[in-house]
Length: 236
Image (cartoon, rainbow, N blue to C red; front, side, top):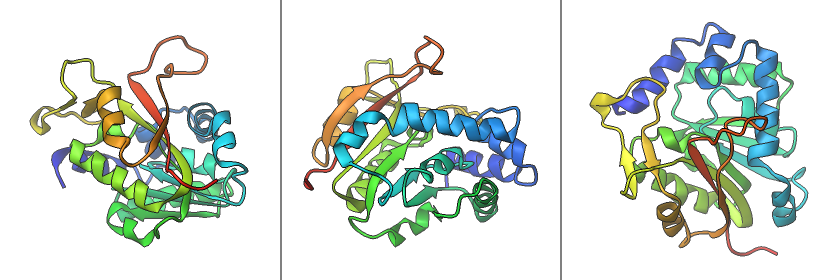
């Protein structure tokens, strides 16, 4: 595990004895109830948006996967829409246990959390919807991002859909990676462009939409990310 990944694991693990501090490492909130609300707001406005219902239909008997579940606020929200939800992350056992406790305290039972090294447990063509929100921008290489894309393609059913957020690169290169020696905790590390990502994804998925969001739904300030909505060919 490199310095960038180790930073996320270690800093999260330091906070497992205090649930509010643990949640704040992933998304700032003043109290746990706010964390839960933030999860629902982001999931319904930035992830599982209305257009996905037209692509994949009723989600209530379908499965969902989150790449980078962190503290679990988004997985908690997705669990109320989907029959079964899965989460994959690089966090250690103590963190996975803490996230599980948070989900259970919110009444969530239909979830399964996996370390990245256990991701092969998820079978081929068993997931209906995949999402990853402000996670890929914290990866340490494009190779790692590409491995996740291949994984998503494997587990997604024909006709399944998803959305991934990427860190926006404003340089002239296809992507930019922060040097490990210059990386500071919680900083973004991988930045790329819409064209580069779409060119990489189009061999595996149909691109449905590319766009940007604001930092908050009630603010006009653009975020530093862009999203790609996609669908795996096949199905209805």
